[in-house]
Length: 412
Image (cartoon, rainbow, N blue to C red; front, side, top):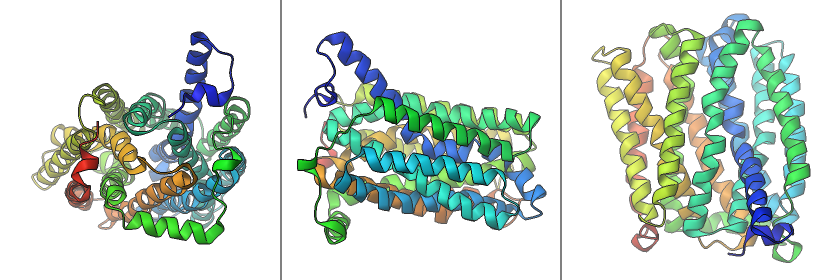
């Protein structure tokens, strides 16, 4: 692939290319962090939301699921639009709508309204996630893409580390709607960053012109392509296990194991640090080790965490057993995400990259949204549903990776 510096039309020279790369990493990393920013900062507030809005734990968790549903549907729309209209315009519209929806969440009078607004917020924020992946694929392919996705995890990995910590601290000085005020500011900042720092990476001559019919054909072709389905389904199932942890852990760790919101945010941040560390290991090994092997290693780590959790919870192991298992479930994602994404998007022509990225995101967030509420299905007094769901999903993810053709999985 050609150098992204040339596409950006910056002055020649090593320093200029390095500066442009730093800007590109910063902007794209922040965009790919839209999901953890929208979800994780809000996590410590879930028990208070349930109390303040006079609703139950499962209804409060539905405000998370609503955001995930929006993220899924929004990617299915924004990805194909970016193939047809270019990356920049749909991205700016999505970020403006995200800021507006976040502001409206501040004044939500009941849980039903909040659920509705969270769908809109997620759908708007989805543009950042799906288009950022498409931009990377516009500029890089194969191992280079895997390395760049791993580099992005340095940036977007900070979001799940800092977001719950910030959320926990915000709750000490303001009610939970203040979290959405902060998200409004983040949306505005990202809009301005894209406006100033991200040029168009898909010129008109490389765009898809077939409309909805072409998008449907592309989705159908991808859904029957083992080189896409294998890593894509493994990524989606592993993400669903991760989202079950995200959705269930505020109640499990605070209500069952009695962590304060601040202690919970620290525990959550440590697990997120594991994702960042694994992502950097992945970037270092890419090109030395086949991408399929790195993906398999991440899936094995997540499966080990799921099985450990399933053993620890019914045995009454307490936090010393539960926290390490959750750390494995989280940290394995740092190996899964960059390599599964790079494998699934490898060798896709530019005019369908947005659609392929959208289908990846749609499957991730659709499965995550369906799995998340299962963590609270038996109420706030037991962690067993969360443990069972994570274990089953992690094992299914490991099995799904086997669909990938050997020639694709052995790429390095």
